[in-house]
Amino acid sequence: MSKNIVIVGGHGHVARKLTKLLTPSHSVTSIIRTPEQVNDIKELSANPLVLSLADAPVVDFTHAFQGSDVVYFSAGAGGKGGEEMTKKIDYEGAVKVFDAIEGVQGKKPLLILVSAVDVRDPDKIPAHYNEEDIAVSNRVRKAIGVYMKWKYEADKNLVKRTAFKWIILRPGGLTNTPGVGTASIGRTHLGKTISRDDVALALSLLVDREDASGLAIDFVGGETPIQEGLDTFIAKGETDFLG
Ligand SMILES: NC(=O)c1ccc[n+]([C@@H]2O[C@H](COP(=O)([O-])OP(=O)(O)OC[C@H]3O[C@@H](n4cnc5c(N)ncnc54)[C@H](OP(=O)(O)O)[C@@H]3O)[C@@H](O)[C@H]2O)c1
Figure 1 (cartoon, rainbow, N blue to C red):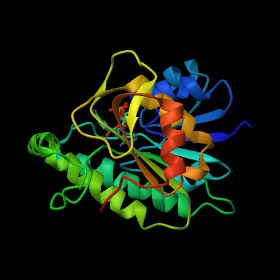
Figure 2 (cartoon, helix red, strand yellow):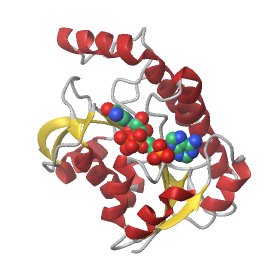
Figure 3 (tube, rainbow, N blue to C red):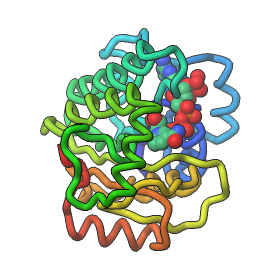
Figure 4 (cartoon, rainbow, N blue to C red):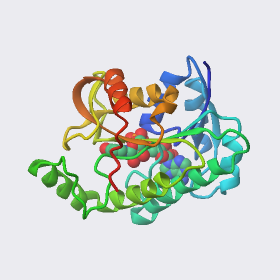
């Protein structure tokens, strides 16, 4: 069934790939922050809406989400603008979107949030991590600890919410290599990158998976066909957000 979909961070690399997968069957509104991106969005057969996550009030986002079935959050400061911008977009921007969804009248949309693998309390090492995972995790935290911290704060905020349904996808390091259609999904090890094509594919498949709500899904490079891996993960129903 055709759905009304809003993508926050609609001009991002993953978001544009996702838009291409969704527009043949669904109506997509892409929230972007600059009018210069309007034509790119129109070329993808989506409807551009200029709203800055940093500046626009919650109510503007509520208005944008009213009547939508699914909202994707795929925005991020991308390390630009230091900790201040990472906090503003990856955390405060995400919370703004959560609050905005709570303000929607009637049925609230399903939120599908793009987070990252290994986002967690740094003092709690997941039981399935091996020595290599711990080494990778330490290395990543040393390099982009600020990013991991604010993604964690956003996820912590989301997992407490019950007013609307949500799913968190937690990809590993993203690449621009062509997608392969396979991945390792759920309680993964760290270190294997994943193509943005494959992340977009997984996000597009989640559009119909309200049964995945309340789950955070680790998603890194691997051998399992993505549809099959998601089906297995959702049937198991064990979240990868471990606090
Ligand atoms: N890079 C990785 O290895 C990695 C790994 C795991 C998860 N992730 C996450 O995956 C998601 C998608 O990644 P990606 O590669 O597609 O990122 P991307 O290309 O950098 O896209 C992020 C989007 O957020 C938008 N944005 C930034 N500030 C904004 C604001 N004030 N208002 C509205 N939009 C704003 C950007 O707008 P502009 O186009 O105007 O800059 C951009 O379109 C991100 O949440 C990222 O944190 C990344």
